[in-house]
Each structure stands twice: as C-alpha cells, then as structure tokens.
Image (cartoon, rainbow, N blue to C red; front, side, top):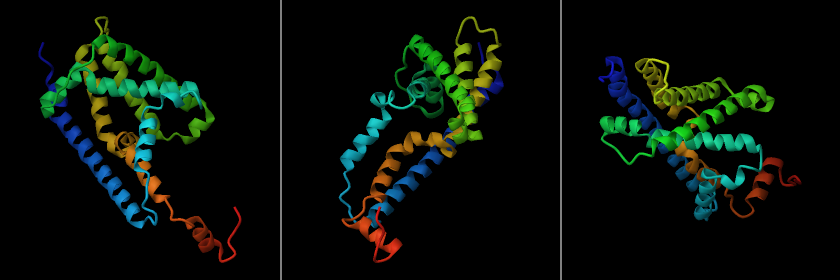
Length: 236
C-alpha cells in the first residue's frame, strides 16, 4: 500500500534535514569538548593523567549494572531499561534501518521484532514510572525543568505510537498514527544536540576533561589555599 504524500515527505527530505541538524549539532559539541580537553591539558601542571583509568571508569558508568541497586534502585533500573529500549529500538528496528538506508545509504542487521516489542513494552512502563517519579517526588521535581518533561513525553509518544502502529489490533488509522510517531521522532532528533540527551556522545569526554582540570601539580592544593587565604592559609 503506497504511503500518504505527507508521510513520504516526513520520512524523506524532512528526515534528512533533521539528521543533518543532529549530526552537525553533535559534531559542534564534540569539537568544543575536545577543545576543552586540549585546553585543560595545556594548563594542567601535572600532565600524568591516568587515561586508562578514566576510560575504564567511563565504560563502567556506561554499563552501570552493578551500581543500579545502590541508590534509588527502582528508579535506577527503570532508567536503565528505558535507555536500553530507546537505543536498541532506535538502532535495530527494521523500519528504522530501512529509513536510514534510504536517507543515508547505511544499513545493518535488525533485531527480532518480538524481542523489540517486549523491550518497547518494558520501556513504556519504565518511562511512565520515570515521569510519575519526576511529578510526585519532591527532590526530583525540584531538579526537573520543562525540557525534562518534554523529552520524556516525546519519548513516551514515540514508544507508544510505534508499538501500537505495529500491532494487528491497532484501532487507530495507521497513516495518522505513523505521522504522529514520525513528527515526534523528528522533533527528538532536532532537539538532541540542544538538550541533555547530547550526553550520549559527550559523556566520556566530559569525564576526561574533569579529570584533567582537577589534576593539580604536587602541592597544588596548598598553593591554591595560600592564594585564596594568604600566607597563613586555612585549615580544611
């Protein structure tokens, strides 16, 4: 069955435009982060940075399975499931791979649809929990801004509409539901470089930059203390 014209346009030139915005925006952030690392390295008095340990720590936080139960375990596991479902669904759903192949000529093997359906359902439950947590837990609500809610709602819209559209019992007209799914996805792609989702590529560089920036020379702490509080210094 041929797709409606507006859906073809959304999945064609508008998708390519959104991908260009996302890639250029992320490339700019990566360049600025690398520039920051280089600048911090030039200023560092002690350049003996434990790069291997920094990358090991970054990898540990990228896959924090053994840390999830330590603080707010339910929230941590929900966040982990939500991230896994988002990444795998985005990259390994056959429909997404087909769209990327048409737009950029890239393709790779897809994951089984049944497995992705299960992950999507788990991600919807996890995302709903994260949203309610931000709404009803005071400490989380105090740290949440409008963009945080917008991103969660966008992601939940994408998960829900994509899952329902792919089911034989879908009660909503397929074309309209897919347009809703696509518009939410396009908006998310455009927002990625301008929101905290950009940490998907910046996380390792930020940790490295922080390590270098705080890597003081021997007696560096005493020198800072003297600069701030004079020759007598201050006990800490």
